[in-house]
Image (cartoon, rainbow, N blue to C red):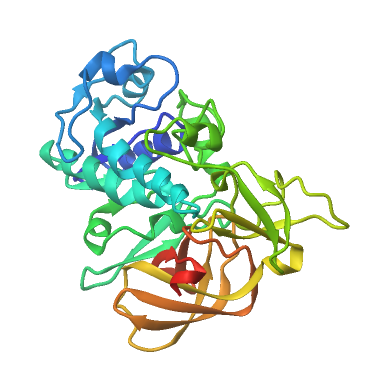
Amino acid sequence: MTRTIAIALSGGIDSLVTAHLLQAKGARIIGLHFITGYETGTDWGRALFGEAAHPEATPPPIDAPAAHPMHPIGNQLGIPVKLIDCRGAFRHHVVAYFTGTYQAGQTPNPCMVCNPLIKFGLLRRIARTMGAEAMATGHYARIRQDTDGSRHLLKGRDQSKDQSYFLAFLTRNQLQDAYFPLGDMHKKDVVALGRASGLQPVTSGESQDVCFIRESTYGEFLANQKKFTFRPGPIEDVTGAIIGRHPGLHRFTVGQRRGINVPAAEPYYVVRLDPANNRLVVGFKQEVFERRCTVGNLNWIQPRPAKSIPVAARLRYRHQAAAATLTPLDASTVRIEFDTPQEAITPGQAAVFYREEEVIGGGFIKPPAEE
């Protein structure tokens, strides 16, 4: 391998080993670390770049200074590590999506937006200006390439770490020059290889689903966002009887048990959020199971099906993909009907469609009123 490959470096062991593996294959590596503006500690964005760039701008990268946490990563790998000012784009594309989805009474999944728009969007464009021919990350997923050059996105070999779900909204074009070197490895082997190779991460623990909320709760973060509004309202059971009050719908998601604070013979769970009427609808455990949902805002990695097909549909990262029938309704919407009812089908979350190990596409679950 003689290609120049840019790697999104987080400072953790996964991206370190990703770079190490590609170096061992002879690739020239460029390390990219993007600054979101939501990091804890030193405000490196303002210190190094001043005001945030326009969301659609392509800010020039700068070398990581000696005092920056990513500087030791470059020394370990013997590669340049460039810092990218993504604050404007991240706030515009990811945080605004996160806030707006909660405002609409749904539950967002920011990684599904960050991967195509930031990591394989803005970062990839900047990498190309630096001579990179491909983009690599430490995701646990695999790429299979056919003899005609077309590519397929597959689950990672380590089923407990498989992250193909988070990559389902990448475009076919983005997948054409994507590398996921950890896809055939198990996490324990990645950690062991990093240790044997003398690689020392500068961040500890696993990456978080919502990386920009570190020192507060979701509710506190949302309440501090400009133009985000909420108000207390009624809690109703599935018959329509008012049984309590909620502090704001943004504090709840379908299937949630904690925080309802209404005494009953058995625990209540959130069944539905009704933002139009500011109602929180709750029920008992069996009432959070549904058999079908409608999915919109679709992204197809493989050709869009013209008729009903069997799939395994995954409704959130920790959900076990379940057997279902996918039926196209129109160019931008499909219906998913599961063989068995599924717990907490949550509007706003991503539904990802698999054919055996392959991701064929995905989209966002629509509220029942929009079905």
